[in-house]
Length: 432
Image 1 (cartoon, rainbow, N blue to C red):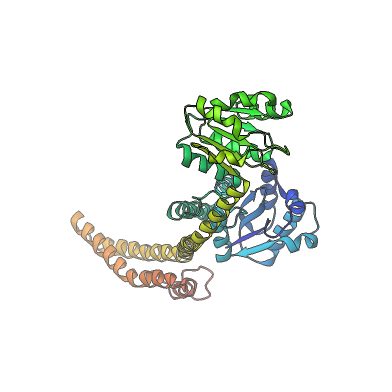
Image 2: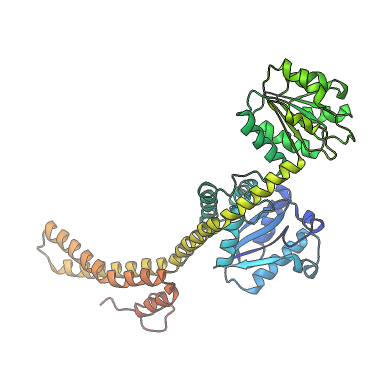
């Protein structure tokens, strides 16, 4: 059995290639069904996100035919030729596949280092494959180990602690300045993509109310509906400023849409309660002089991007710690997998010895016509103890050599010595 991982990602394929491999849930299901038809594939999982498509499989022999079958399947998914697709693919086998999977689960291989979504996507991919009964002993253990490693990375490092997007950085700053956001009111001026992303983060913090305004009212209404907020006409948003704690602005205006002069009366009406302005427009929407006022905080796109760059640097410092955790996970899984080599031999050895013990005990008891139940019990205990003591040496040696990476060599030797394989050319052990 060999583990193989084959796929493409943002690191190897441009968006025009990746978009061909964004599979729906039904598409993933169809791909799993087609994998079953590839000779030698025993287990499989398909992970499809906007930035990667990966197939994780367990093969019977680990030969070139299984890899060729998976390459052909990927080419069919993207409606491409195998040669056209080949430069964009990566292939990892054995320990390399395990390490890559752990890096993906821990978001060390993501476009945004430390992003949390990939773990949920991997769990969903595993759940679908398991639901199709296409995972078994190897992948069940491997995927659960990847979840455990990812959890350790997130809890034992600070790789996901700092905001690394402008919208997320803005919300984190708001929390630092205003405290918890549950009772805060938010005004979003402009309904572009950046505003939408920031609104998503604000909603996750449980803000009390969101108002949305835009020069095109229908777009404001659309965004407000998405976030269970309220749309207001662009001409009226100034009247709402005294009620707002957070103002996020991203319009295409060539002039400031909020000036210092009007904020004087607004702050007075708010009785000096702090206000937080997020200006992610270029040119800027908010007069920077507002930042000179007491209890008013203005951050523009340069401020936020500076914070993001610092945080990216902090995340990268945590990568070394994360890689150490991943290395431990790979070592642990390898030890478990190597143990699979010796377990069948240990079981076969015990079964053979127990069979001999029972035959010889039955023969002996048949000659002891006057033996009591206690005599029989004592003989049972004695023979079991003798067998266990005899087997202790070979079994301990097998386990020890497995830990050293020599499990297969010593397994083959034990099977030969004790003639555990029926097809062995030598005569079977006599039970006489």
